Image (cartoon, rainbow, N blue to C red; front, side, top):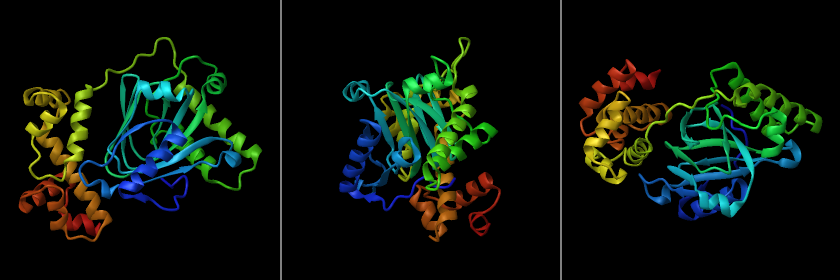
Length: 313
């Protein structure tokens, strides 16, 4: 996915985090933010770049960071007193958005509609890159000719509607050559594409979301993934549940705690092998693998090739 806006630079470290947090509030509203917890706050990276509203006729921002959790509470909502929806386009990385009793996994190119007037949570894995476009409530409901919208439901980049909508949103906030009439036409096209996806009907039923404690446990795992001593006891303690309950939660979704940790470590290793020239042994150790032979066997079983073959590909 092409970057929707150009960041001049990324803020870094503790001071950078404070600046980034302030920019997030001024562009998108008040949020409480957990900095990256698996490393020092000095390893923070992030940027917030405003959409040029005068040029492209929409408000919003591109938000990049390696924070683990962004939360908007009822108190934040009351303090802001803002009334709009925001259409989120995931540019790079992964995110888990939580709102309206639903939890939605976003991958690069996916879109989701969220309500700034409802509590929400975002959980991230590593560096995440998003664009949030602000859509005033009254105007959006009028344009879509509905009083109810499907909130926090993933608009899949793999579908025609999702791919076209993402491309148009990307173009809307990046193309400096668009005239005013062209920008209006692009926004009209986006809303026309999304109308059948976003307009809720009386018989719509929401899927039962995974328990919030499971989402919290996964976020804890992400924060401590590089810790070779990470264990179910530590995860359960931080999540405020028992080890037995933790195992039951994961079992409900056909996985074990150990297997989930292994899968996440292997994926992080695979990403690092592709994106860096670091020694494979160093990458494995840095993501919590004590036994390099075990790592090699597990990697080959997961990706159908050895780590070195994966890098050569």
